[in-house]
Length: 83
Image (cartoon, rainbow, N blue to C red; front, top):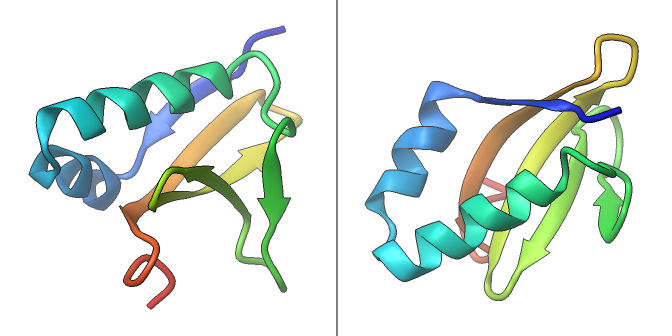
């Protein structure tokens, strides 16, 4: 089953601020999560969700396994995304 990807407004806004080649690469990697959201990701401490690493950028997201949805919460450079 494929998961549905839902972008938080703030995450979509941050993606739009990035250079087009970087944004396309991140968008592509997030799309791959729809097939297997637990592959190549790291669980963050506490209830903060999961992290996907794409070069120097990080995607913070949460998974709703019951509804088969992935909510992308944050997108940003690794030096700023966890703040």
